Length: 489
Image 1 (cartoon, rainbow, N blue to C red):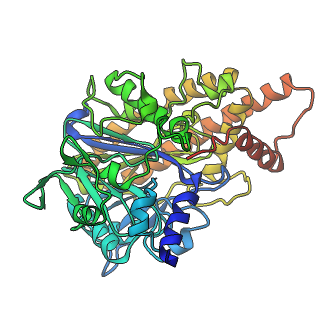
Image 2: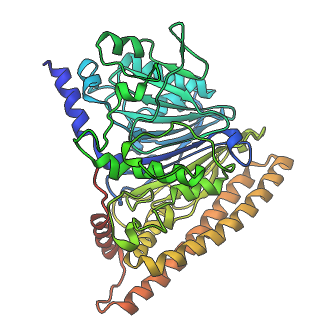
Image 3: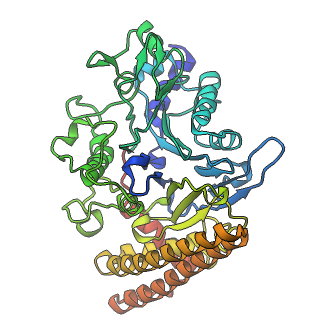
């Protein structure tokens, strides 16, 4: 066995579960507004890993874009994750997935290849359409290779695409059907590939030899006489294989829950790992439906980890989420309003989605500061402190926080519509910045008020009194992470 092959197999076994996420993509005809939406919970290795919001100005060779790096990757333009550019192209990267041993034996990961850390900038800096974004990313994968497995959402106002890697240099991408939705949670989800006379059919893209390579090395798999990318390239774990069952507890229940929520698909038999790639919803999905999906923690079931302390199945909304984001491709002819990213910092079930427009020119107070130590000023830590308190007495605290944030969210929605109407008449960019600053401030002020209320509740119900200073929050945050790690993958 050569060195590259060994590295590839080791990477298969050692891909960190720390970057586990949940992705939802909604086709425009499947949404209530006729707009493409996609969202993802971005889960990371530590609940103290702060996110910053950053505006990247246009240069002679790069488009202007807005992205969300971590505090410790910002200086290197790394881990930008969710981004939108001046051309109306948006991206969410990445959903961590794992290739199977056979695929990596013949085409191992490349240690110096493209990874989650550095893939966003070269795409969002240049792409003017979603198909072009797919071509840029796919070209890099084919030529340079990848260092890890991932899935990526790429969208514009007309099309949403989902790209998955299959091995070191192989990938496919599929256009999300306009009348359907797609969900993923840390496993390959693209199955049959449309191919006609050796060429990809409309709605499919991929590395030129993605099928012939597998055929040549005798590991190609088929479903209903069609080449199956998932079975061929991806790691599939199910109860029948007898090896590693953590996909069942860590991944499959999330998929089953969302498909049941949106399409009333039965939860029975989810352990097989067999799910449709796309489904039509029983009703057209709203922004609130996507929010509810990403905020889900199996409430109303015996598997709610925060009430029953059952960690049999990994929740969708987890404490170590650095952020949850939902991007709406608005179809608005006004370029400054063309894309909106709704960002909830931290654990989405106990946070609030704030709208950020592609036309914004300044970042609200608190959204560009903070590190891995609790502080009083960064937006991330102000939200994270409240989320920590919620988990200390979930039954009492979560309903209070959720009701308050939902009420404010409705008020923000009304303000948002009014702002857009004024902007269309005046084209005054300051209106966007003023709106964003105002609603971000309102959310943080409400958050701080709720935090004070829950701090009081804690000290009234515990014999050991806390000062709730930053040192206390550093300790409590660590304790909550240890209590709800949801290790797996």
